[in-house]
Length: 113
Image 1 (cartoon, one colour):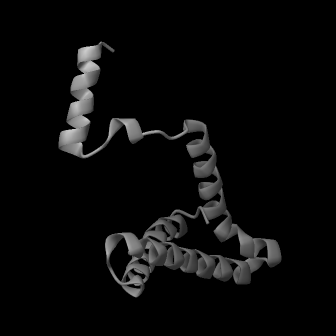
Image 2: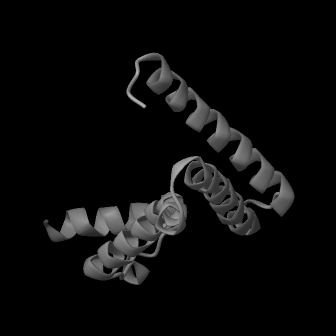
């Protein structure tokens, strides 16, 4: 990139977006590893009950674990959005429960479960 273009983009980022280009930093490999660990740990939550038990009790445990996980994560993120923790947790649990119901329903109808 030419020097004039770089200066224009830096000025735009600083003045319009409020981002200091010199403070961007970050390590892409570190970001990828952290993302992998966080997504993997989130994906393990519904599987944990199946490591302990099987059948309907594992299914019920998986549902409870998922809803608790949704509630805990949204409670934690409520510190960023200024809403009360209980409100964010309840909202996320309701939305997550509805999403799970909407995907479980067609699975039952079409016989894939």
